[in-house]
Picture 1: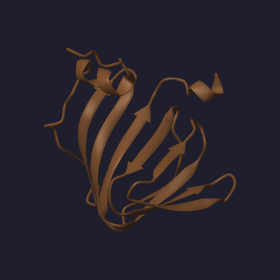
Picture 2 (picture 1 turned 90 degrees about the horizontal axis):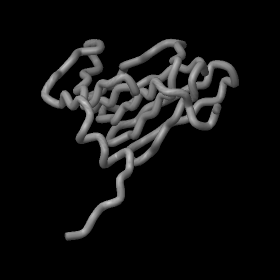
Picture 3 (picture 1 turned 180 degrees about the vertical axis):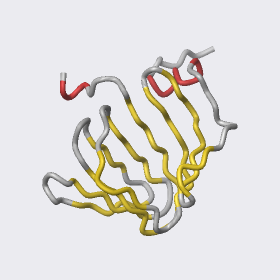
Picture 4 (picture 1 turned 45 degrees about the vertical axis):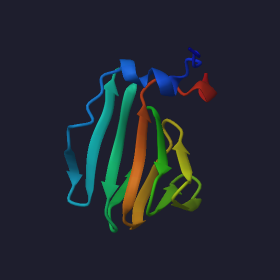
Length: 121
């Protein structure tokens, strides 16, 4: 019997898993919570073209893994923007204002980490 190394990804099975719950964020974004604990939240999201969040920021690190579709993110402070498609990853550090828009419907793994960003320690 082989042993697998313990990584954060593997340890999720011990957390509060809620994959059967469905929540509507807006009429164009449905969230399927996977994990919700004191460290943060993880969701699979069905996002429809036209979903848009105006300038906002988060206290923790905000990450998206694009599974399908196309999304545009903009850093409000610098004016820089990027367009992400399936297979792309986006990370917004704590406190950085940004906006995002869904350009093509798809699915996203959305991670919000409420703990301090290790890069800022």
